[in-house]
Image (cartoon, rainbow, N blue to C red; front, side, top):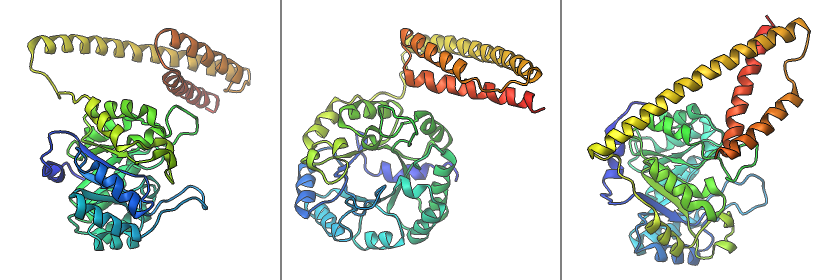
Length: 360
């Protein structure tokens, strides 16, 4: 896939003076519920109304969506409110039904993006369409897999493409339902700056109390829009109740969010910024030098262990280091999540070095 300014054309066509906002319930439950939420969103900054019609669930037995009848409810939403309509598709049949009901925006979910077979089936069904197609990141933090899904759609001559960042699953529990892994999205932006990027804070958060912080971070990272799950009675929603908010709360949140300028031409600002960036460059160079020295010592430890036939992994020592670093990091204003990520990476690199020595 190549950089192509035309990929942003569908977004530019909206001529918005604010980020694109897609909102609506996690699931379409009843026609009354769908229309009630849509009318509460009608005269806000929401451009597109979303609702899950087919709901892929982790385990069977949970509510899996109302199915094709929900598409007729979305048609009424467009007729009565003028908002665009948006839903998830996961196979060729979903695509055909969505196109028959003139759904404006289709998204491919995280569980579908992990499978090239599913994405290719959807791409074949959508070939040449002028509908907007958004690709959620795969469940696991794999940029190549995400790009592969986008490329399959691009190859099918689908030019109105964009991506949705909904966070990534992780083995360890954190404050998020799905870890944002912002650095993966930054890498995506760097490689394809013309690809419109939407944040799904609802699935990243998994709970409504941290939605606004996630939205603000996304806007600070130059995201083009937000997809926020919105329900008139969130606590009694049929799916993902904890992460949905009311239309009233959504409006308030949008008012409270700050839209940052991409840059500032003020000379004093630029001078201060350049000075601080130079300071960071010096510190980063020092970090690399320190890490290099650390790995040289790890190599020496590997030689010592090899000479005495000692195993590479010393769990007690590792746990002692990790515990101490978490405490020290907290005193220095560094989060436990950050310390764990950094020192686990350092530890793994040390193990790799020592294994090479012991097995040589």
